Structures are given as structure tokens and as C-alpha cells.
Image (cartoon, rainbow, N blue to C red):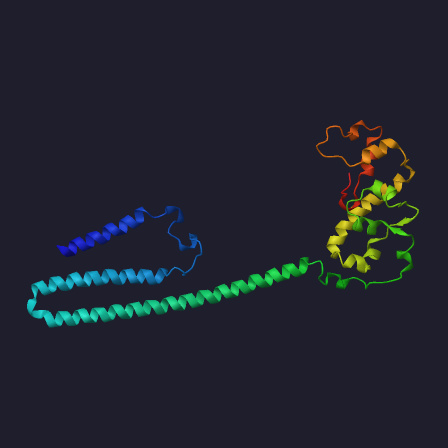
Length: 268
């Protein structure tokens, strides 16, 4: 009778665990955070099996002794053997767990090393200070074609990223007559450029600045003493409702060109 109660309890417990399980995980341990054997899954499972086996053995021995009272010594011997076997099962479970844990740690270490190598490789490709200029011609100093005029349009754009074309003329005093703009290859030989960009980054910068260069040249005939231009070039609070609207200017296209910032100009 007691054995039937024990089995009934085990079956009830099993179905209760299934009823309260999260079925969205579909019972896969890979669906759990931190997938692996870090929570002693195997060890706990074996421990539960041993516990159920011990309970079963206890009730079996109790029933056996009740029916065979003259068989006490053999029953005690049998019980001792069962305890020893249970202990050996626990030791084996511990060894299995240690093996699996060491194997998983080694796998994680290898995966970590692989991710580290990949990360370091990516950083070396994106680091502006990397040796990506190695395939380009060496830095040259004193090249005649690189110093033809007092001002350089590219250098001005890099050193003054917020300057617009109006600032180039009025603040910096630059004009097409005293300002040069070199080819991409000549700039690539400059240490000034290499200290700040990779070749790919500088290509993007050069494309933007080169689009603003012809506009800068075309503005040389602009009358910068015009008060209307000065009014539109002033800095206004973004929430100032009285600031002038470019659409209301006598030449809106000219105002838009004067406001071009070479380092961020994408054309249009």
C-alpha cells in the first residue's frame, strides 16, 4: 500500500512540474540565459534520481523487514550495499560534472580568443593611427606643387570645420587668387593628413571639400559689403521668430552657397 502511495506521489510530482513549465522554451536548455552546465543540471538530475531510489529502497526494506523479521542481518547488509552504491553514483556524477565543466570552459576560452582576435583585427582596420598608409607613396616635404599659394582650401576646412564659405572670404581673407586646392594624391603625401585620417576617411573628406571648391571660386565676384548678405550671415537663436528667412532674400541661392560648410557639404 505504501509503495503505491510513493509511486502515486512521484507521478503527481512529475505532472505538476510539466504543468508549471514554461512551454515557450519547448524544454530546450539552449533557450535559457547562460546556456551550459553552470547550474549543475546533470548533477542535480542524478541527485534527484538517487533520492528517489533511496526513498524507494527505504520503503522496500521496511516492507521486507515487516514480512521477514528473521531476515534482519541480510536486510541491513542489503541496505548498506545500497548506501555504498548511492555514494558511488554521487561520486560518478561529480566526476561527470567536472569533466563537462572543464570541456565547456575550454570551448568558451577558445571562442573568447576567436572573438578577441576578430575584435582586434577590426580595431586595427578602423584605427586612424594604423599603418594603412603603408601602401601609399612616402611623405614628401618641400614639394613645389604643394606650396603654390599662401592658403590651402583643404587645410582651412580641416582646421576650421565650422567655417562656411562666407567666413573663408570675410574672416580668413581667402580668395581663389591666394588659395590653392591640390589633388588627392598630393594631399595623401602630407603628414598633416595622415595624422588625422585613414585613406578611406580622407577620401570621404576630400570628396566633400572638392565639391565646395568650385562654389568657393565662383563666389569671388560677390559684393561682400552688401548689408543684406551680412544680415543673413549673422548668428541667430534657433527660436528667434524675427530672424530673416532665406526665401525672402533678393538672391536666396547666393545666401545658400555662402552658408556652405565644406567639411560637411554633400552637394545639392
